[in-house]
Length: 87
Image (spheres, rainbow, N blue to C red):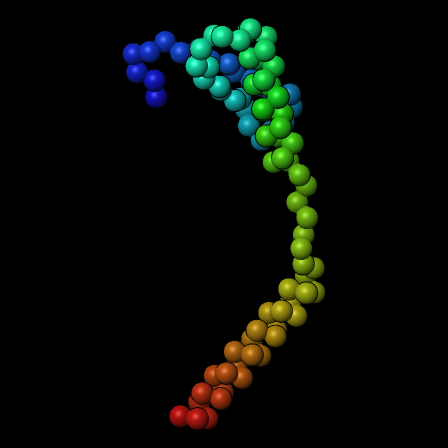
């Protein structure tokens, strides 16, 4: 929230990407040229999109997950059986 201060902003709208609708950059001072500021804002937004839109890679197959679940269930049943027999 900006109160009582006039701020310069740069609004970048990406082309056809559904990750975000627009990015708003607040500019501190006007020491650089306007085209340099806009170019830098576009570069930052493009770099953010490049990092965030890497395709999702599955780490485990369904068969591996099912085997891990079964092994965990058997292990926990064995522990409970051992505790029950000892008590």
